[in-house]
Length: 505
Image (tube, rainbow, N blue to C red; front, top):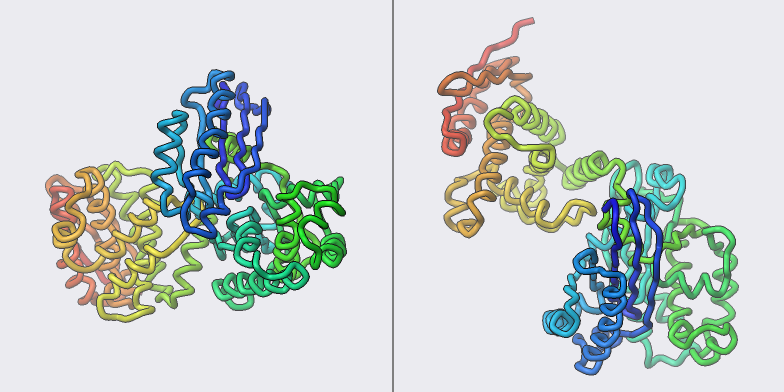
């Protein structure tokens, strides 16, 4: 967004927030920031749904937000997202519909992978030298009332990403019946379990150096410490923790001179920060003071961008393949062949950079199903890819990659007849174009022996000829090509042939 006024609303577990910005020639200026503490997540985390009383109270808050938006003339230039407090509620559909009917505000439930990605892009643009942190190893944790959304990055790849149910309000609700003098011990055990689950998802020997934080949990710490730099130390947090960990909420409120809701969340927040410091092995936490609504505004107006997105996601996908013990030489050969086919066949497919990236991802991951079983490995590859969460790669794109790895073997038309007949014609055609090239690339190294060194593509009148350069007779490759190339002819309406020539020294 280059010019205009934009509003971003975040319905969190413990507060509703709205950030209103004016954009002039791509430059952003904050006009107003509103926050209304309201523990919507209290119902969700204890009952599993939002009570009618809370639905009506939340709607009244959003009516006031709507009035403020009308004052600025904001009609469609806004985004309104719900995080864990609504996302995990059994009656979230009713809540979203009621709000729309009463206020006209259209809410969307943001998924954890999208939530952490927006925060990552914003922090990356906000913190100087963050690119260096990525290379050395950094834990980015957005610590909020409901969840902790985390990304671990190292060597320009995403090592871990997820939103875990360990937010301060959630911990408070889970262990609220335990006496205050020993409740901190339950918090410690619970957060240690979170750290264990993260560690188990990382490659062995993965070392980190930096801990960067964002999120609503920072507010109470900033109110107490009022740091001059965007950094807190272990010593500060440990001294405060020792001082308050056994005190009841009302005493904490009185001693620290903070709001009652902040006092109730202070101890679990401190536990979380200290345990994550232990996890990283650092005595410092650097932070971004940007609120999530501010991040949403910058992201949805394209004011902040993800530098190095394709390179990082590519590195992440390659690392995932290694984690599943892929045949690296075959995967790299298939990927190289797929990329060359994509470039040489552009006059036929008319696809762009994003589609090429999907083909690259599918070529690299198509055989990871062997990690489970060689029989029907393409189905295992499909399920493994479906389970992946890659920040910045929309869920729909991940699904497309999973369809490609499924169809790189077997009868493509049968898959569509049985499972994907409801796809639009445009989507079916996209999948068939990409899978046609993937199957040919895979067939050109069917023996996994790298017998075909390279090839040329000759688009002739009435046919396409792949002229392969081989180091020896490629029997399996020719057989596989005959089986896997049929979908190409059906998709593009032109036959494709394979010619082989043996290279002599």
